[in-house]
Length: 256
Image (cartoon, rainbow, N blue to C red; front, side, top):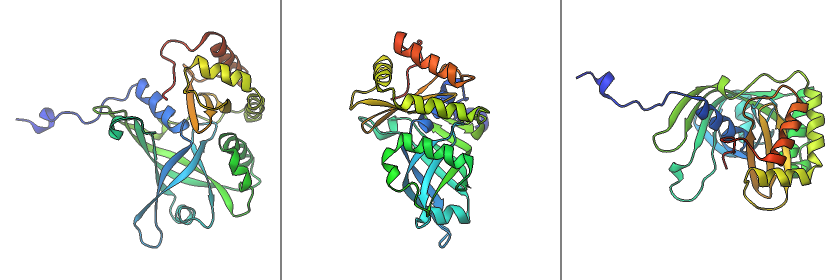
């Protein structure tokens, strides 16, 4: 008996459906569990952090220099994130993803900092109370690998490259689109209904990127992934407008 051939495979072969679910879980999370390496004890230290994503899909956190995880990330950039919302029933039956990342601190005054500030505030408006405090900084948590569990019997291993894409060249134009969408609550409400988003408070756009867009309604956030990445902000807006008019294509509804 050959153990190698007789043992059932734990991991499934990664397909586009798994990649899409992984991206949706990461880009759709308003907060994640963050694990770092405590520089004083060497033990793992876990906490909860508000998250956003950069235009390329890289997770972003805003952290005070007084926090334990900031000190830890500056001493050792290796960290881990856990994303995935609970639902009814068995918590282990719901999709979740663990990312192994390397943290990169973003200097103030850098154009990347300004971009992240806008995207973070669109997702977390109340952060305006402290986002400009001098002891706060952004970290880009760059995925190196990921472990996706889509539910019982649906385990996948993904490289970090499956979760991110190149930052678009026309960053300023994407920021213009983001500002435009920010004021279009009527369109947001129509899109929310078209994609069958959970009904809560008034919906609003909380960001857009080449892979999709985010809607926030009260405490709920819904991530919608386009069928394929778009090439420009104009195409993204056209796609969003078509969804409002006709609804998403078959199979394009978001994970909620």
